[in-house]
Length: 129
Image (cartoon, rainbow, N blue to C red; front, side, top):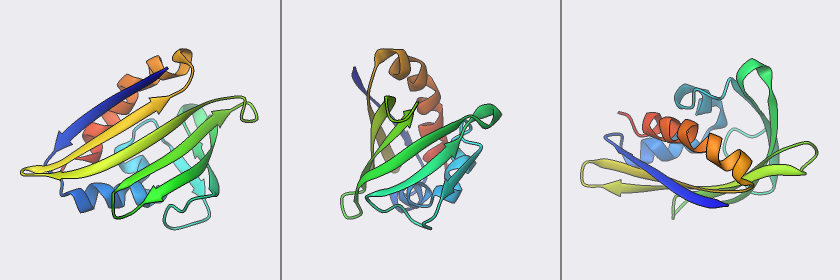
């Protein structure tokens, strides 16, 4: 299954982009993230990490692509030794009043459908001023 959601807000596009690019900031705008274990200070392709979710539930991830000029990035988050997971592509664009961010989620519907409302809320936080 694949679906795309978006959100708009008053934060400048550069601010929203930096909130994505610095994993230590993720928990400040994504309430489902309790912490991130990632060796780099900024996202880079072909790197790995772990997101700690509610109750400390770990989700491993790999950064697949980062396009700084285009302000898009893609990662794979998985459970159970890469057998179950989601591929997520994010984007940020300037608007006349701030920012539009979007997310395309691909994976089994059993993961995509419950994740979409959580992700929508997080995107709205990402673009808040």
